[in-house]
Each structure stands twice: as C-alpha cells, then as structure tokens.
Length: 55
Image (cartoon, rainbow, N blue to C red; front, side, top):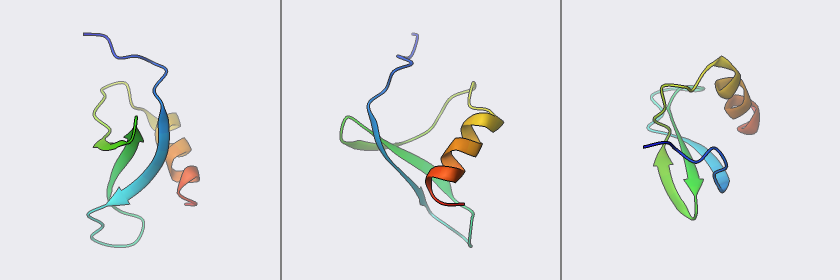
C-alpha cells in the first residue's frame, strides 16, 4: 500500500514527554491524532516538526 503524500495535517504535538524537548510526535490527519510511522521520515522531516512546535 502506498501512502498519499498529500495528507490533510492540521496540528502537531509531542506526547508522553519524559522531559523537556523529548516525546512522541503525533499529527492530526482529517481530525484524528496519530503517531508518525514512516520509514521515509528523515532529518529534514524532523527539523520541520521541531520548528512547528517552536523547538
């Protein structure tokens, strides 16, 4: 199955934070929170997520 590259992402958050600047990234797609689970998620994606949560 091939994922749609154009997701309707409307929010990003960190959850289960054991400390500052640490946690699991969740995104909202079509109104539902879910964990990012993608083998193609790389440093550039992580950098964008960090910037979106003001880190």
